[in-house]
Image 1 (cartoon, rainbow, N blue to C red):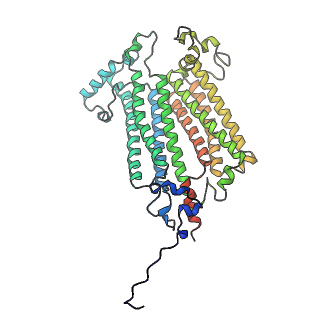
Image 2 (image 1 turned 90 degrees about the vertical axis):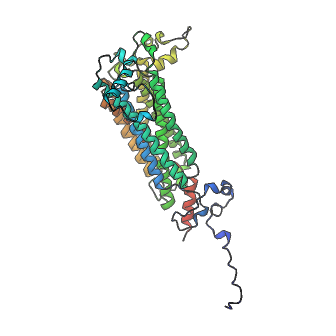
Image 3 (image 1 turned 60 degrees about the vertical axis):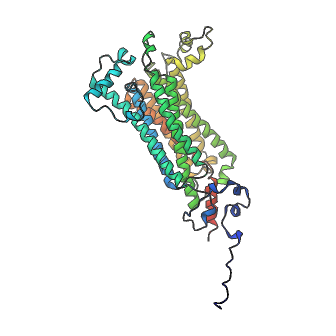
Length: 447
């Protein structure tokens, strides 16, 4: 080559050779997503990844599962706090300064004096000593500290993954919603505790100082929603990563998700699984009303209640709970405020959940369904069946033995475990995300 002549101009490779979202999909609809949904770094697929959407790595899924485990723990600790009647021992909400417990004798005496002013001390614990007070104080303090730990353990990694652009397109808004829910839980928790500190209970004949069962159910329900969101999203992230890297979907490399999810049999099974998940959630919420009203201390027998399947109607719908002049609120007030009715409803929901879980499991064992279900879905359904049986035994033990703390706490943990099994079943039956599908196609066309 003559050095005096200019070098030949390098030509860019044709557009059709780029492994882009548009080329892979054969359409332009993904071009409208914009550059903010696409990664700027390679993830080791061997293709040009600058045009592929961000696919969350396993570290994101593992972080979410660890966060879900912390929420699981705080739910159980919260149940123990309620069962040991420790929740009203701290009479103030100090999100920052309340991190440290009392350290000196004077500090402990000051906290004890605040507790002495509460209705619970005056009506129930007037003979409690300082050392006994410390026991219930530390129980509630530990519950609050664990809530703060969850906030830090979730928000700090969230900021890191967002800054490093490790989150798939739909995830940031969802995770910000979870972070907001954590903060809301702190406010809701204090709102619940505050209901048990009101002096109005002193003027109520036969009144017992305890938190509002409505607020308790809201607090538990929010925790379950948060837990389910973390668990489901974490499992989905790991499932998408496996699919993108190896083509494995829900534990199998041979099952085609398009064929499975489009089958009417699986569509029907998925709808039933969603309904059962909602039923498990509703049953757990009804348990919060049982705990809030100490309804588990009534009718400690099964399957009868006072010698019959159901208590008398005048006891289930007692006019004493109606507050409206025309008694138009007698139905819903008894359902949510009458301990007898609350326990009866929880029994009905629990047995309906158990029977429904057994039926769905047996349905999953039919050849027509079993041959279509992916391995992960089959295992999750078997776990749900196992947990449903464990839950029945724990529930009966809780009732028959007058709500012993360890058994009752295990019963609450079992409800979350059953919910986890159903969430895992639903995740196993979800389609891979758009990002995972595109990454898989990009990897498939790479020589």
